Image 1 (cartoon, rainbow, N blue to C red):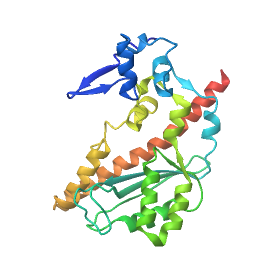
Image 2: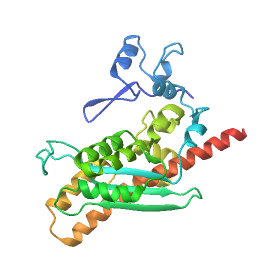
Image 3: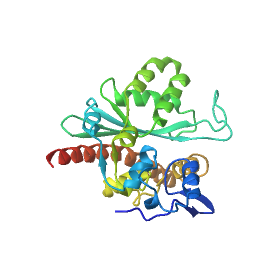
Image 4: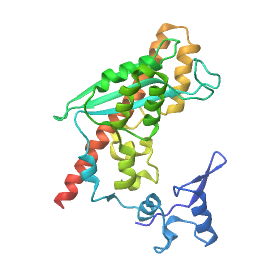
Length: 275
C-alpha cells in the first residue's frame, strides 16, 4: 500500500517531519518535486528507517530471533525517571544535570513469571546513593538488563561516578544492559510506528492494551513536573501519595511494556517461521 502522507507537516507552528531522519533528505526530495512518501523513486537510497517507512509493510529481519535469544535469564527490564534542575540542588552537580529519582524493574524468570520492584525518592535529599544501592539489590549479579535507549547506560555510568564506593558494581551493571530499542532499529518495523520508534509509538502498535491513555502521567516531561510538585509544592500528604502513585504507575508501564514487547516480537518470529 503506498504511503499517501506528505514528507512534512506543521504542528504547533514548527516543522514536523513525517519522514524520519534529517531535514536534508526531505529538502533534497522536495527540490526534485517529491511531496509525498509514495512518490519517492525506488532508486533513491534512503537510510534504514526511512526505507522501511517508504515500503510501509511489516518487516522482520532474519537475525531478529538470534538477537532476542541473546538475553540471559533472569531478564530485568529497567527504566529510570530523572529531573534536570536549572539550579543545582545537590553538591557536585551542575545545572540541568539529569538526576535519577526513580527506577522500575520487571524481572522475568525463564518460566515466564514476573516480579516487579521499584524505587521512588520521596525525601528532599540527594537520591543517588539510595538509588544506586536499591538498584543493585534489585538486579543482583545475574541476567541481562533490558533497557529502551542508551539513556539508562548514561545514568548508570553517572551513578558510578557519583557513588565511588559502588563504582565497580555499577559499571558491571552497565555491562549487562541489553538495548531493545537497538533491536527494533535494526531488526523490526511495523507500519503503525509511522516512522517513530519511541516506546510511546511502539507500544500502542504492538501491545495496544499497554498504551498510556489510562495513566495520569503519559511522558517523561510530565513525570518530572509532577515530581517537582510532589517534592516542593504540595504539603497535603494525601495529594503527595496520589502523585507518588501516579509516578510509580508511569515508570512501571515502561518496564512492563518492554516485557510485553519482547514477548510479542518472539511470537512474531515463531509465526514467521511457520509460514
